[in-house]
Image 1 (cartoon, one colour):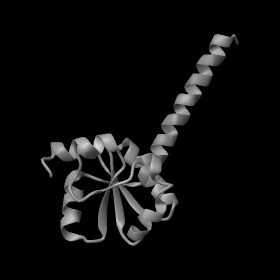
Image 2 (image 1 turned 60 degrees about the vertical axis):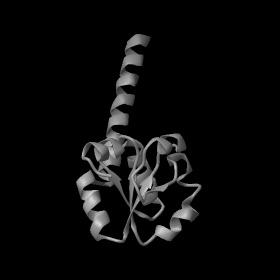
Image 3 (image 1 turned 90 degrees about the horizontal axis):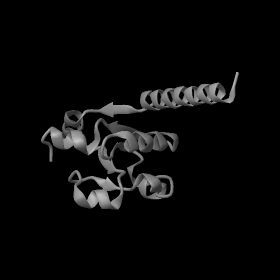
Image 4 (image 1 turned 135 degrees about the vertical axis):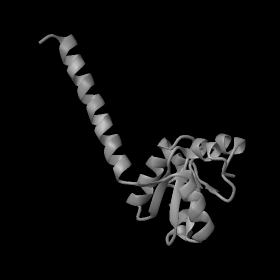
Length: 129
């Protein structure tokens, strides 16, 4: 076996590991559609929205009534999140990828968290404000 073949097999193994990790992460978190979240927000006071995008992204657009803690500050700002310990925290970002990571981190910290499918893009596409 030459070095090119070894490189190829290592690359394939890394891709498979990445996909398996992503699938396991996705399965470990609850996911809500924008319509589900809008309905939950109307009837359930124990739900909050958490925007995990950057401050620059939030300046451009955000979901009214949401709180903001960027993904890179989630573990550092867990004291700020303690006031929401008894609530379900639904995380959102632009497309749903960073919020999936945030929801997973929050679960590991003991919070009841979920992910908004498709992020603010799907929220806006659904005509929700």
